[in-house]
Amino acid sequence: MTTQSLKNNVNIQDFDGSGTQVPVYHPDTVAVRGGVKTTEEGEHSDAVFLTSSFMFPSAEAASGVFQHGMPGNVYSRFSNPTVKAFERRLAALEGGEACVATASGMAACTLLVMTALAAGDHVVAGKTMFGSTITLFTKIFKKFSVDVTLVEVGDTEAWRAAIRPETKLLFVESPTNPCIDLADIKALAAMAHDNGALLAVDNCFCSPVLQRPLELGADVVMHSATKYLDGQGRAVGGALVGSQAFVGEQVQTLQRSLGFTMGAFDAWIFQKGLETLPIRVAKHCENANALAAWLEQHPKVKSVNHPSLPSHKQHELAKQQQSDFGGVLAFELAGGREAAWAVIDATQLLSRTANLGDVRTTITHPATTTHGRLSDEDRAQAGINEGMIRLSVGLEHIEDIKADLDRGLSAL
Ligand SMILES: Cc1ncc(COP(=O)(O)O)c(C=O)c1O
Image 1 (cartoon, rainbow, N blue to C red):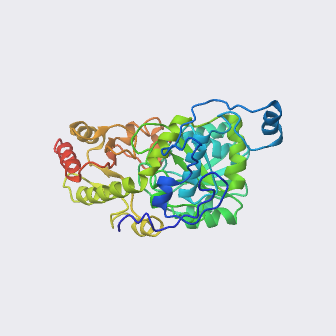
Image 2 (cartoon, rainbow, N blue to C red):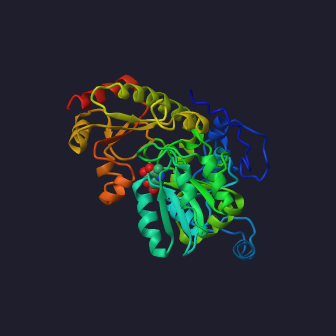
Image 3 (cartoon, rainbow, N blue to C red):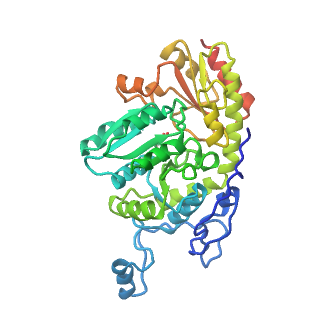
């Protein structure tokens, strides 16, 4: 399967911020042109509005915007034209009506929970997730009397069994970090709606190029823009995409008060990142698919987790709900932490860093980095063992990546 970024046409809402509806464009076109509102200066590249507040021609005009809901910018915690341009482009790519950009992926997750839930509500979430997301749900939100049940990501019946009358949110990463498990998004969406709950999907590993959860029935898409949306490891940011009623109004209203705002310059970086997203993701997938197949036959590797492999337990599901298999994979070594660290330390080209979605291949040991602060019990529950290494496969030549990993594996 090759990346088919033109597979789904995007019905663009408010393509250029003028409020007019424009005809359907392909995602590759939306990625480079969506959301742009050119100023009277006629700039071709997007302008950056580095300003904290905005001026009004008169006191009456100020009152109109502040008090009477007239359109206009007030203050960059509320809205900023550069941030809005990024929000419009990402909303169009995800096929959502509205997007709210945030200071980080974790800020997006917190904003989602604070908007959708109140004390006494219950969340069902996947057992395997990014470490800070697990901490947020199992420790931090519990302080505010929001209860959580964690279930096996791929076990749809376990999700159903965990739902209670007070369940208001199903939250899932698919594929998960770092185990690369998938959830059946369509089935979870139907289940959430049957029970009056929302389904939110962290679409960080796929990006809208490979998977569009809203089309599969999800209510909200969450992003860490820090990953593929930027793609070059430059800035930290996040976003929520969904309906105008939920994201455009409820989330947006709370965002103004909480102030989890994305800065204008970061929004500009992400906007530029989106322009190359389809071609980058296609190449990430090509390299990751080749590397997964190569690692799986390597005599020093115990197992490989990547949905491109027929051995992956959700290979068929991946073919249905994604247009390619993604750039992140995990592999396991028999020798536990000692072996994993030896391999990582013997590589010379790959970056020993925990970020992912970068043009540079990154290598990390989840048990002692991204999930290092979890208790042993929580880490085991998240499916992470000491022999696991996670790779975010970059855009270097595949033979150079293989040669470096081979060098690493030779240390065993
Ligand atoms: C799947 C996933 N979701 C969310 C986050 C959090 O994003 P951020 O670091 O931008 O807050 C990460 C970070 O690694 C992640 O991998």
